[in-house]
Length: 133
Image (cartoon, rainbow, N blue to C red; front, side, top):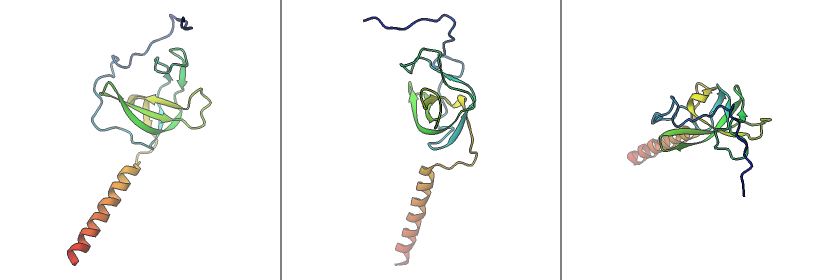
């Protein structure tokens, strides 16, 4: 069964693995789950989305979304799964690299940090109560 792909020699291919911004990402992520972000460049299909031609615009520059999850590619490149609610594009969830995003919330604190702080405060309170007995 032959694939129904057509090759367009004018399509610019993006190879984020060997591009100049490749290499190992920082150990700590720049953005957190739930954080509001904006795209600083167009996201085009690099071949990882199988239902559109390579080079197809997936999400335009300026789109605003929220970090849904984080993963990695080749264990060194962080990929953020960003949900662009209400988008009129074919897909609403797109994988993005850090250099493709900017934060819309400078003072964002994720739920994991808030939960960890609440647990630590509770443990301190319980330890103090045990000491008073």
